[in-house]
Amino acid sequence: MKRENQSSVSEFLLLGLPIWPEQQAVFFTLFLGMYLITVLGNLLIILFIRLDSYLHTPMFFFFSHLALTDISLSSVTVPKMLLSMQTQDQSIPYAGCVTQMYFFIFSTDLDNFLLTSMAYDRYVAICHPLRYTTIMKEGLCNLLVAVSWILSCTNALSHTLFLAQLSFCADNTIPHFFCDLVALLKLSCSDISLNELVIFTVGQAVITLPLICILISYGHIGVTILKAPSTKGIVKALSTCGSHLSVVSLYYGTIIGLYFLPSSSASSDKDIIASVMYTVITPLLNPFIYSLRNRDIKGALKRLFNRATVLPQ
Image (cartoon, rainbow, N blue to C red; front, side):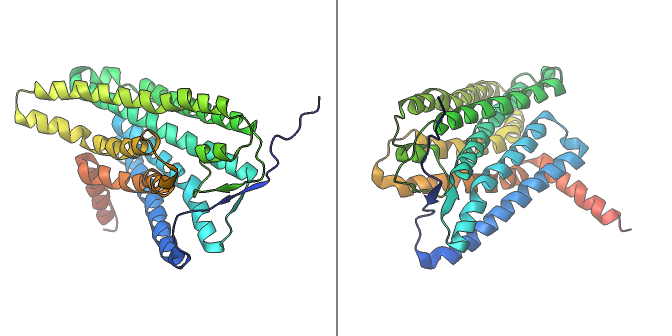
């Protein structure tokens, strides 16, 4: 039998942020500024890590990949939102919407797995400091990143393939600023029970299992810190994982509030605001959290500026 196209919708309409038309210019300038700072800040972090040999450690290896993922996460959603604000064109092609959804899920999942790898790195550094260099070898770090990419790609691809089997009929309006999977499923006129099953099992596992691993790692870290013989040891241990813990709290706090706490139909605006938090605000703050709270990054900045002042002479 000849396979028919499952979708009769050629494009979707993204309603965007819940703001008044007269506020468009202000929010366009605000989000454009935040996006440029996000891209520049994370690129600078990657550059510092690449140029400074003192930062060639497993922790900053993972952080450089996290910075790259944050750039991807913002670039998947923000440019289209800015374009819609500027041109007043809210349409997005069907293929473009599915592609955006794929890369959004991929970037979000990759963030989860990289944060888990960073938590394991902190666990080994604090709980097994004498074996740190033998455990966290370059091969293991590359393996953890590779597995993170493969799992993220597989999960995003599974949701995309199941979505491609659905039919979309009359309603093509998405009450969001990007093509969110849940919002797309609500528009489908097909049976979405299989899609919901995949979200409930695989989708939630991608969020909950990394979070459990992070909590277990920090549980062991907490026990080790309490056994520290001196206050100096406690302060040193906290300084090594404070930045990562701040990022984890900001990221997972928003995710849990958006996807795990019950919401009503009247809370769609709150869902959009929560989405802005982890797609725009979190990638924006990550470079500042690591640069302001981490002595190694501060040291790299000083060494880079010292080189810049010495070279002209």
